[in-house]
Image (cartoon, rainbow, N blue to C red; front, side, top):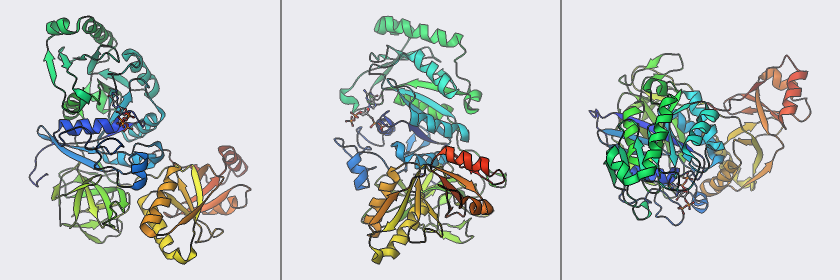
Length: 523
Ligand code: G4P
């Protein structure tokens, strides 16, 4: 763990990928390389593997997917690396989007056989929007897949970043001998281990040695490298940080190939934490007084401890456990006696944390997603945008005798951002509407309401697909339009719900004076 005088630089990143691209496997491999764990498989909780951490909910365990987000911190060389975990399933994308507000860079993990997939593209858009530099890792090179140059073309076409490979595979996908380090000209030769469980030994070989070991595959790699060089596909740090290029690595997370290089590249090229823009446009420098913002709130992680955790990213200064900070939104002091680093089930007490680090604040019932905490000079960070919901359900307590618990639970789900909660006079307080980006959020709500609040809920699907922001006069006019329902979100915003985009267009066309605005698709 860090100390107040810890001068070690930070790297805080997340992996963005489509489900099944190998994110969990890569996380394990990274942890393995950093000696956090001694055998791959200790991080990930999938059936058949030695699960430890990310399977805190029954449902999650049953489905083998990761619902929660937390951070894995480890030391690598003279750095501290924070890997902020992102939920893998597409239905949990809202959470994933928020996580991206807490990182300085992202690793885009691409399955060599599938190329860029929808969820990866969506998440990439969020990175692009936020100006987060992206390092690309082509994974599963040990399995037959697409041609390396084809993949580069696809990346350039689909996301508009120029790929600048730092390594180039020696051997086609499915015949992975290692990689050509394009900057040193050396051959990094991999040796397979049984199941990739142990750290795979890598040997650095000169070009002459490579010729002898890999023969034609080496010659083909050299040819590929020259083609790339002619195309100007060489790394340029400024272009990378400006979000115009993406360095590319080739790997097999399962075999632990290319993972050490990824760590090295993160240390060398990924940006360290920098000044954070505040709502008033000013910048809070990393060495200013302490400040952080909450990017995730979660409760009921552990059946034995019904606690509530607020995850905050430190933006400036030094966090010290026990310090009393100001809560920007209420102006009230907030004691940080209980601070933890959380990765799934594993928790350790955090004594100090520096910019880029993630702390889990326990029993932080006052803190909501997007809130700012600080010491000394006041600062307010901008709220984390909520996303355009596409699924809507009306909800009520199955047992009216448990209405109080029902109300408390729904309020909690709202505060955590599990779903957005909408209300109207028409529907009354007993039956609000839940809005979500993905339908699985409703299952999460159902499961948690039952297990944490002992409140069984009844959900009814509503025939809406689209919500648009409106204002008070607009809400009055639109309430009369057929097929449209206007509701109030808990943050006070008025939302007009439409069955489809055509109806929304018609409503806007027929009422040109009404304020109607699309909700942001990404923050
Ligand atoms: P995710 O978190 O992105 O959803 O993916 P995960 O790591 O669970 O990997 C999905 C599948 O892809 C797993 O196989 C995993 O073993 C495999 N995989 C990941 N990286 C590589 C790689 O570099 N090479 C090869 N060949 N396979 C890889 P599975 O059979 O679905 O699951 P499991 O039974 O292995 O857990």
